Length: 324
Image (tube, rainbow, N blue to C red):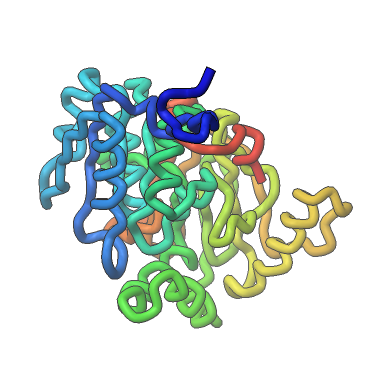
């Protein structure tokens, strides 16, 4: 029998967005994120054309993120559109509410989206939203001077925070390349003695920085170091002992080789990694603090705690593909 919907009798391919019909979608977006024209309006148009009901909420300065998701139980899907800071803050506000979240890449670096291997094309992102495949991952909770906030990627003090600080004036001209240029400028970063408490155990070391990493891939999905997993209920605490950030390039090479099964590490000594559910970081000299690419006025000391399985992110890849 000829398919009445076609003149040739050929089967009509299924609409990849058909699963969005009648879905209630909450979109929280940061209009100040990223450079140039946003692809978000085209994406929203596609989602609405598929039959979804989209509620848009624009971030307003000084409004707590919790207010944007106060009635999240009324929605089937959550979208956070902005940079890594926007995405992680929204994920933290929506923690343990069990509504799948899409980390829409509308910022400069979009490392969370890169870790999740999300496409940049609006139509492909809409297909990820419709596909409904999620991975449940951990989040981090950082406490500084009694105030708690969340992060998804990593929190750090020292050279990495200085790199982000120095990249701010370069973003408008260079975009994502601003981070690379800033890293190259960190020739002689400040070195100090760090005092850590890792799951109750004290530890001291001399270096240029400390990171509590949840996700482990930098730009181009290159691993920061090996054995970082966002779903194991632990941070990978990275002690940066190298004289400057560029000396960590060999460690990235080691991580890539390990991911490809090419043998034991060829380089060592520039950094050390530890596992922890909780880490407190202090230093002899106050160091700037960053989490998920956002520089904050606060400095050390800070405490980071893992929140196991706190959010379900939409992604086209398997959970195992998130590990370095």
